[in-house]
Image 1: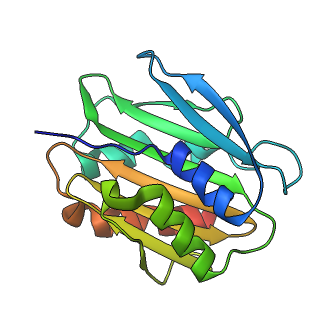
Image 2 (image 1 turned 135 degrees about the horizontal axis):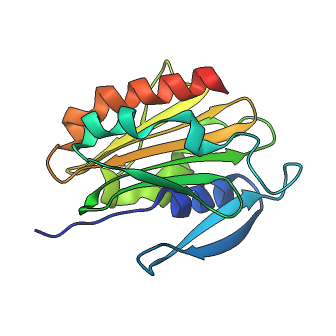
Length: 184
């Protein structure tokens, strides 16, 4: 089985690239794989005003993706949190809270999500309501992703699973997105 995984941190970089300036950074995960993240240069400071690792818990993610023992880590700039299952590289989740001055238009968010998530997470994002001021979702075979704008932030939540299809995770990830939107 071929597994395709897009990191939310990379998606965030493209989301902001479509909407304003970014300053890329990189880090090495515990497995030695490099990942990238971005912070907006149009917002004050280079870190998120909210710790993405406190917005969602492993206990909320595990029933959705079938993972167990998920552990979290945040990027050095504090904008992205990655949850990983120590026994399964597919059962993961990522949350990014990226500062953004103002609110992107639906077209800007659509273009950014389409460019960032593309075919790896279900193709073009589909507009959805009930989450933030502008929201899209992208559902694929092994993932469910929501991207939305709320209170000068772009939030991206992606959940990946080896055993649960994206379509089965969709409603639960939407509930997570609504929970996060309510906290920001």
